[in-house]
Length: 113
Image (cartoon, rainbow, N blue to C red):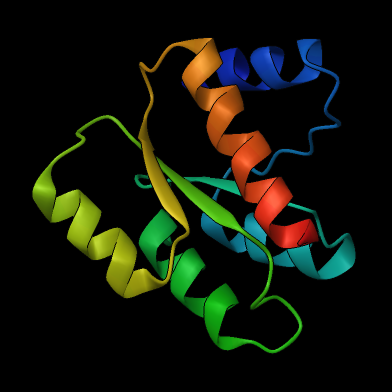
């Protein structure tokens, strides 16, 4: 449900969104169609968002893709784990649309610079 809400927010802002239902599917999708930005739920079936992020940030082909981790529990532990995994940011699932879009625009701007 949260994925659908975030997807709707991003689509309504003009972004093209591809979705994966688990970590393994996300890794395959990124290989097939490298995106400009990745949003990863921390808690996914199989591989966690931290695991997927870590794998993508260690591969030359995907290292420069900005990754924003999404979590239900925005805690200091989650922030530390996201840094260790190499994420470019962490945001709460329940954040306002404006905050989500601000983070997305900021990460895309940094990537283009």
